[in-house]
Length: 259
Length: 264
Image (cartoon, rainbow over all chains, first blue to last red; front, side):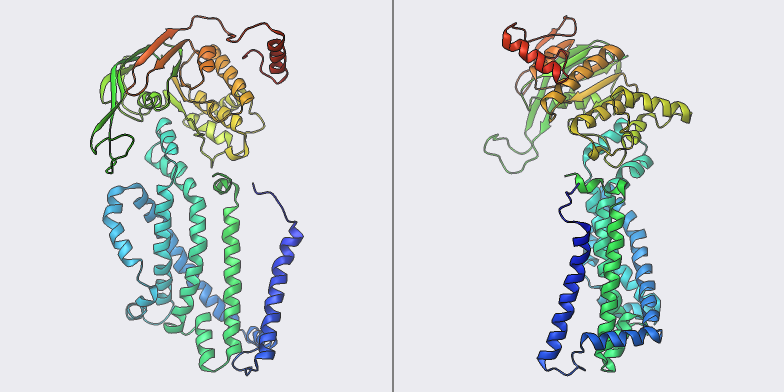
């Protein structure tokens, strides 16, 4: 366990302080740069337009649309990617057969798939979900494979010693052993998913935060653009928080204090 | 149950290192003999301590007996039968904790009893073994929340709960602080007298071997052969260090105060 060096009060105040400084620096830049507020809107204007967007319901609508796509794409990727990673980690033959393909597809940016995705799935949620899936799937597969490979071999000896069946090895050794690594991988991947959803929405759909940003840029409403950015950042912060909480569940937290 | 007969056993490893190492000078594919013509017979219920320089293959021998590894030639019969693979009849206690870190002490001990039908009986049995190693009140703790000595005891409880014929312990006291080491040693001796299982222990500590063993087997350097195989027909508790000087009395007293009653 880590020793608690700072009180919870300090921990809660610190982020408030850093955000306050960030906003002050922003405001100062606006005032002293001499740029037009249409080019660089100040915090107050952005806040005002945020209220406006909340009031007319469009911010909520776009956020839900993006969240919906990220959730679907990300969950699909996790549901298929984790089992595939486990198979690749456990079976040398599967890994010899599939790893070359995965390593070939992995470096291709999901954005390069946009033209194909639009042709196959048309305009709407599906191409966006597909792109998010692609972006999250490969990192999850690779992270899971690595996690399975790094399981301490002693545990497999223990399993053999206690006459574990194949199913029990998966249930009682492999899955619990990789959970801490998987949670870290999901934390990193959910960020990628958010990056991709914005890009996908700029091209393939007519809703979502990415669309809001692109549409506002076309209308030269940079305050709306910034509203979109702020919401994405806040949701990212929140998702990361959820993932970290997952990692603190007691039966999953064994990895943190074990070196 | 728990008779072991090792007959002209050899174990060779093939050098898989492509680049020649300066110190060994072995070519790729060359064979290194680790165990050479080992003959040992372990009687049912005997506690045998294996001593020898590091790298001499003691652990390899244990792993072969546990079914994790295979001999190159020769035979091992456990109760007249060939070893076909790992089995819960021979439980291996690992040098570094073999407890599953994502399971509580209770769940770890339960591993060996997980096929018991009667939930009540199972519960009572688990509780019994946890109490045997004095870990009551720590049932719901995870291994990383326990001290090194408690982890070893939990692993011992897990091993005993299966009721194996043979316990195989690979340096079970390494990494423990001195007093915990002494106490664990005492506990293993008591446990052995109480349960009468065949126990194989690899150790580096001569005192351990002399105090615990019914038999001491000493291995030579690699390729190792049995250098000495002697029965220790002394009653427990044994005292290996016994010069009755003022200082040694004080030493005894200190040991006693700190909870080690006779392992001096």
